[in-house]
Image (cartoon, rainbow, N blue to C red; front, side, top):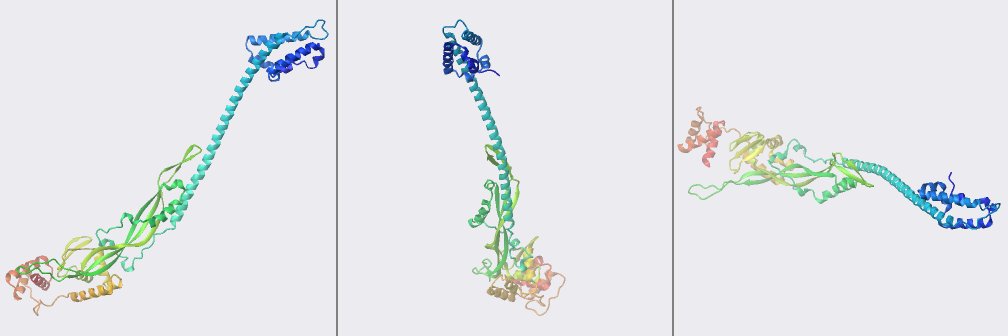
Length: 462
């Protein structure tokens, strides 16, 4: 192990062997150097490392000269040098000072490098710890997202679509098809009152998820029919030479549909990537697209929709199960719709098969007025007006004779001539009888001769 300069230059226990003056001078020499250089901080090896070329040679020479002088200072020597060599105090001190400064600078660089390595290692360890913490916290975050979704799904699963209380007598029918184009609620049907609980459900989600959950709004509609009695007058007619006049109004039932709405809000999570930044690391969570659940409201009454206006005579025909009768005919069939024309009613009436079946079924065991009243589709007065109208109509039976006669007309096999003959016998001119017979035979070729004559009489009375 290399000696320090302090160990190398100290006299130690050899002090008594030297001349006191020499010891005094030598001690002053060491004290002078020690003021500038800590001799115990540098070694012989440091001299080899930090003194270069002639500097190291001078160092060796100084050491050698110093020891030669000391050898001359022993008490047993006959000759003692008079003074301490000046060269040893100044030149040697300068060499040791440079050596120490260079070692100190090198040590500072080493320390700085070591500190930088320690700092880099600390930073690396810090980053490693942060990465580990980021991964742990990210997993906890992902678990919270999944738990948040599971909680919302569990809450939404408690919502069931409320059953609309459709009356038993209506369950086999679909009133919505009675209207060709039923209208639904406007976009503002989902009011703030409905959105508050929806927002409350969404707010329970983990904040990172709230913008990734969409809500779809729609509704289901249900209909309950009701009726209103009214008479519909045909258009004004003009008879040549006479002023405009109107015919009696046609008794009708105006059908309404009371529309009830069940509002529906569906929660969906989208297929999106959710960023999660932790300790400078950008991690990601992935949303799997799925339906989370549904919130229902209702049923709530929305409004009455005007369905159709049907003459009571046509309803009677439907109730009696007839295809068509005098004054009522089917002018078009486009399944599942029939288009009817009723004498005295200004417009054609389009009825769905479901509506016709509904009227026929509810009047199998009772009259139309009682069926409407029993089903609470009208009030007592309306039912009374329907009853009076039905009494006037009565279900037609095949007449035994032509009005104004007492016997059934005989047929010659030519319906046209039979009608003309019957009308002529009742006093109608041939020109009028011929026109009426042609109309009836073309429009109602399958009716009985008696019915043809009755229809011809109605034609001539218009």
